[in-house]
Length: 444
Image (cartoon, rainbow, N blue to C red; front, side):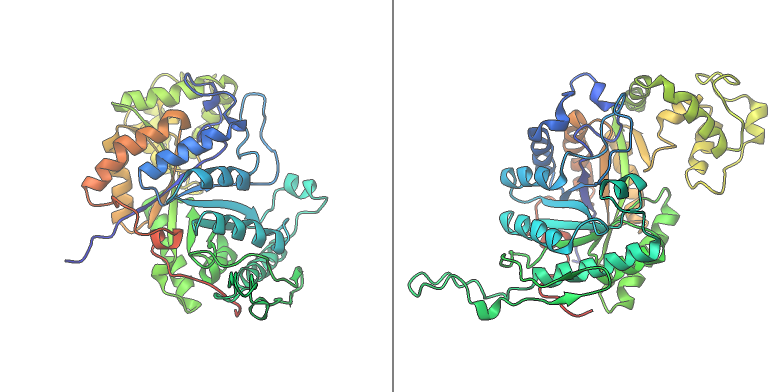
């Protein structure tokens, strides 16, 4: 009997607190978790207990949110956080973002390859371009146009992969009796030069158990599709509904096929947020409490919700703790420019208060489920069986208990339904993702 296809799960680590940047104030949370590497290790070990394929750390080389009421969006340094996790785990994959715009390919190649060898083949690189002005300013640079950013990305990935393959698979001899640590005839410079980057090589690092790190990508548009189709085995995506998710996944698979690859060798992970309670009301209450820590943000959220449904909403014109009046609902419509709008309108028409509609996460950057473990599992099952993704990049609202709740309450439901594996398929990230071994890709 053919085995039923199973989803894959990545735990998005954020800055140690969770998806909501006021989570640091929740009871039970360590307010100093940002600098406590043990907190990353603890969450990663929980995710490994739940058989997650990987943890994922996004990153942008800039500080661009207000650290008065909020925590940073990213860890102090993603590679150092993953190094700490690598030493305390055995199976789970370790994926981090590093910009192709503001990092030399040699440094990228060396950092990820070293961690891949140290972790015995569990590492992935999320290769992204950077366009934020504050990131550019940190490197004394200007914001490059899209063509230049993606031109740099292609060169960076090609040089990085060449550097990763600068040792032949059997170059590391370790011949103690003959006094030959490695065969230098099988360790060669790569001598690649493009318009933006160049490197002589080689790296001083042998292959890992999976050959080389897995490449991920997280970017949209035609340029992003080409980058993913050429190089990536995993893609982090941000769709808000099943239809757009399915379309994006199909476009990725078609892009992989155009470059002579098996479409099954590229996996799309849809971003997903959750707040778990024993009832839906408990899940919503968690989100209401998180919102209450930043009351100054409420007016802006209410106004934005109004733009999503075509109404001039404000905290001065409506009671946000009451449902919208019937005459206002008659005028409401889903803004076609915002894919989150149909969900917002649906909840308003159900008679929820504006505060509760916002608590459902309708203006968050990923779909949100606030409810029971079964409701969370139902959402994941619906998207997965609809072909909207190969798996999910899940982000708990509050890390300190959200990860444990997902592992202990949601994962068993998915396993019982035959939607998620019970054991790791192998020792490397490639094995656990179901993508092929790769090494020494030198031609493009």
